[in-house]
Image (cartoon, rainbow, N blue to C red; front, side, top):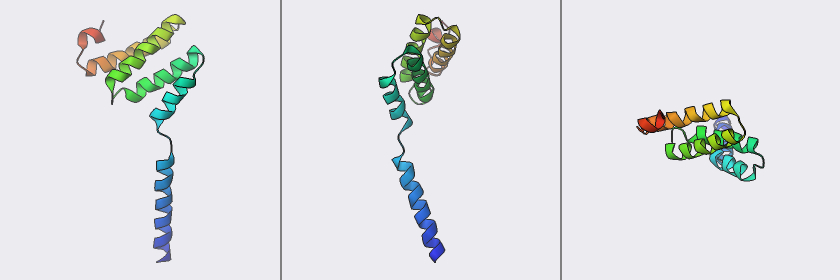
Length: 102
């Protein structure tokens, strides 16, 4: 009987710990607000693009566009290619094929 109570306590502690963790979306959004240089802004926006790629494709496209602009501004062609790939992926799933392949 004591072992059942100890297992129950451990499970309840794990549940409490899981609820106390900060949401990834919130932490990335906060990190974007405090990002100072273009490099850190790009990294956070790229992570947000990846976070929203399957759940909220419109928002993912918005973050992809911001990444593309930053990559063009700083002549980071591999970063631009990666962001264009993510944007194309989201547009393809939204069935906007002309935009995806343009």
